[in-house]
Image (cartoon, rainbow, N blue to C red; front, side, top):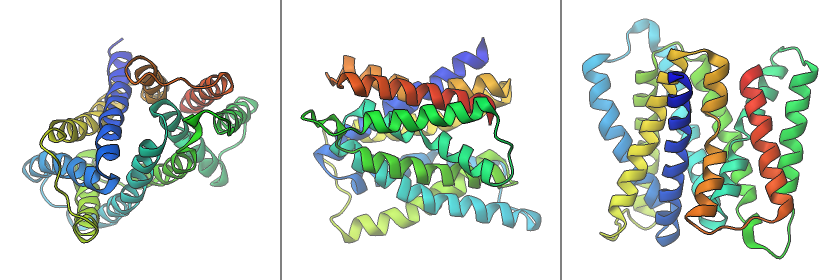
Length: 275
């Protein structure tokens, strides 16, 4: 029961963070919101890591390098996600970004994982969902889909880096966020600055706190186990995003997009059970 609760809270944290970030990115620009997200996260996790874990030792530099690579990829993934949220609906973009689970599954298969009928069916569901949610029409809800696909693909790379890094999760989070911030801050300063109107700052900081909370809850969920339950519950941020989009943002996906979003979420949930 506790695993289910923390897993669903993980998904809710990510979905709510995306909703707040969408509002800020639309009022300013994605790079500015990225700086505020990363400063908030790094400002909280780096000091704690230095006190609790210290610097990596001689045998951990390989894992630290993968965490740093994850930070580079995270910059591009977050940029694509915010560009998608700026252009498209929250539910659509989050559902397509959650296909990162499918991309990881394909990578695992390419590395030698056997393909079972259930695994193949989950991948087909993800593919069908992606097509249905991206069908162009008169509704504006398909805007942002290419950015969401790109975000999911790069986030899959981040997940693989974390998976193969042999250092603890706290150090991974501190290193990756520090690297992401080191890239984002100068790019943002050179292309327009990082200032936010006072009315947007609470939302920007709140999104950063919720994003970091999602990482912490994710780790706790997998520590509690079992992994199958943790995997399914922590991949439901697409579901929460659809609900938040419809209830709070008055988004109205087309019928084919409802089917596509549902198929994508079901496929990702199955993959979380299998991979």
